[in-house]
Image 1 (cartoon, helix red, strand yellow):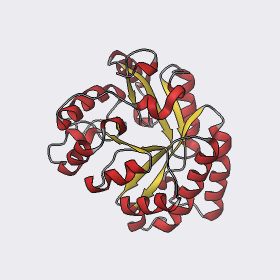
Image 2 (cartoon, rainbow, N blue to C red):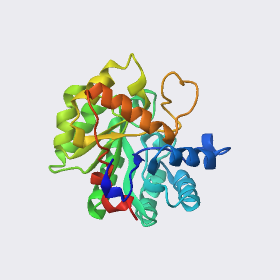
Image 3 (tube, rainbow, N blue to C red):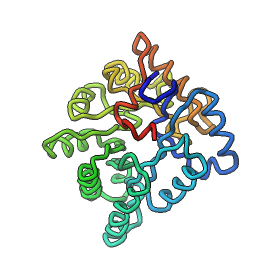
Length: 265
């Protein structure tokens, strides 16, 4: 485990602990996480409403929770250009409240196919958030679903490194070196326990250990066979064990290398 954290512990690099799915027992979820050796949980807000919920979670559990704020592609559905601009305008101020990253933001091909914002429209919003992250010196937390090629092209066109994490990676293993060269970490969640997720297993096996992160993606992606339930931060130790098996050996969680002193404060 990373000594940079000040004490041994896992970092759940992506959990929507603000989600209403945890409203009935959030304190118990936090307690289970701590008992499972989870030292920090990064809670990424996806729209202004969730930014507020995430803040309340952090204020109740300030030792465990660290915040990130962004505009998720899902958050763009149903918003006209003016509403999207208004949300973007609110983001810089939100980041002032102790955010350690910009995100969750990215590209989602499913949304585009279902009549939501096109990938081009999503790219405009994503680029604005990448610019903001660069200006603030913050890493980004990226989302990509059926849009890994488009995301890679957009990031390469920026002409420089993109510090951050591509969460819940579901793209082809062949693209892993390209994302790593851009400066990204790759994070994996409950799908690593799915015996049929061969594509994910291959990506885990080829990701450099120093660029490999673990996440619960709670409440989504519950580990197999708990597929009808939610996931939670306490799951990350098991997920890391599965990832180590897929790689043929143990590895140290490098989350501190990405988020640095922000995980200690």
